[in-house]
Length: 174
Image (cartoon, rainbow, N blue to C red):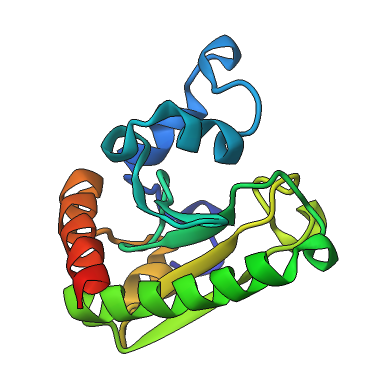
């Protein structure tokens, strides 16, 4: 590659992201998706896997990693310090469940868990707090992202939702 900057970055084939990027502004969802999706009652279409009393679990529709889930309070808030004790407890409890379900279904070797609080911290939807749970595997940051600036998805979104939904149902029956 040498010093030729044209060869520094590869093109990424990620058609699931282009769907959103190319979507005309008038077709993009209006309002807060984390407020609107639970009201739709179309869990499979909206990728909602679990509904609790104060929070729900939803898949990231445009992930860079398989099994990227989010725990989201129903209440529309952006400030972590305004979460109630009940919301905080349920976020923690449901996060434990999400980790166990991901272990059962995807067998990751580790996890990234956390909040991006505010736009400057990387929050894509800063106005509605949500916690990310991303399964990780040894070697998942292999030569593709390091050398080619490319990440590989090995499973489709619908297939992943179907497998995870079954595991959430089974987990709650144990």
